[in-house]
Image (tube, rainbow, N blue to C red):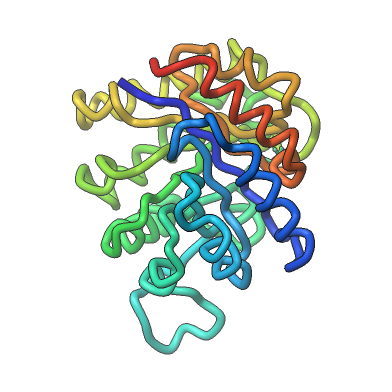
Length: 255
Ligand code: 13P
């Protein structure tokens, strides 16, 4: 059985003051939601603030990236063990903005997931096609290959601990959401690719949808049988809208 889960990716947004107000709104609005149904993924400098405010609240937190290395001369990088010291449960790997702007390959994404898993973090592995790839009919091959390379590098033990997020690049920050049917089609494909490696895990792995999820479209997306929740960008910066999205996920019940 899979329970629904929503994570808010703050991206490079926030300030101590704005986060304090947002976290306050989330904690006070989350009463009645099951513990573990929501998480926020904050910029590194704000993880201590998340830990201070969210500890004991039932809301979990995490980071948006990590180094593939455990420690050493890697200026500017942040190790998974450091994220654990600030109470992180999750870390994004392979977000499309990192793939596009920092040249991250699926191999590197796999190695980052291994590094996350080694210290007990749950890697949230992001995959998704560009608009050009969708228009060229390449969605299935692009997404399957991203997952397959990740699996080849990271292996079944890391897969067993991972969450996958399908984020069509053309839907991120554009206001153009995938239709529930488009999301379902790719989520079912992701589950089939996972099933080929680990049939048991395919029925339990959480596959989140990301790309212009809002309060107004969350319920119809989360109603799809293979959509296990959301990875929310812009709308996660607004406490009441993010809570609406989380409530929509919980209202769908487990699949
Ligand atoms: P938006 O919800 O702003 O489209 O961003 C999606 C995303 O990239 C979450 O990781």
